[in-house]
Length: 247
Image (cartoon, rainbow, N blue to C red; front, side, top):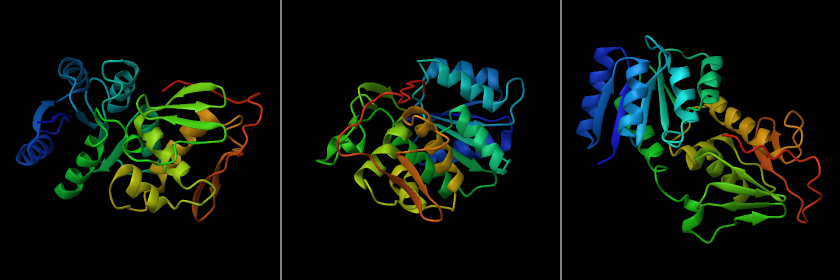
């Protein structure tokens, strides 16, 4: 039974979420502030964390950053819950390390769908490892067992989401992939015109793979249409290529 930790200071919301998760077959633990939430995450090492942003004592952004820096919790999927809906709040949440973002109020079915999608990535080899799909082209090779990319001559550590996103683009190398297609394949739910979710993770990938992330050569934006991965069929010199491997 997957274990989910709910960190939220609103008793009514926390209980509503917990009851519906338990009815769906999950083992649920709860914490009402950031300090207790972080402590429980380290103690329980749950399969997924649902984290409110506006918490007492320590806010959700800080809790998420701390969890991502600790190797015991760095790979646990984090679904952020918040009443904030501004684009900048989403960006800050993703930059702090969140995997997905749910704005209050939300429908229970939507919450459960996003939980299921995130849990599919927990303790598993990516879909790329289960099928005879493209795993390399030119200067790029994906290593699904370790969520890594061999980029030119360097090994780059990716988060689970970054790996799935890069794999999605690699499967359609040279083609424009629409945001809705990316959201369905990588995040596992029908899109809500949530372009910012993809944009932030594309930016993270560019930071790790592009020589100049502000002027991308390989992961290109096709304005109004989506994103396209374009790699040379013969690997060029790796000189000047960024190979940052931080998460």
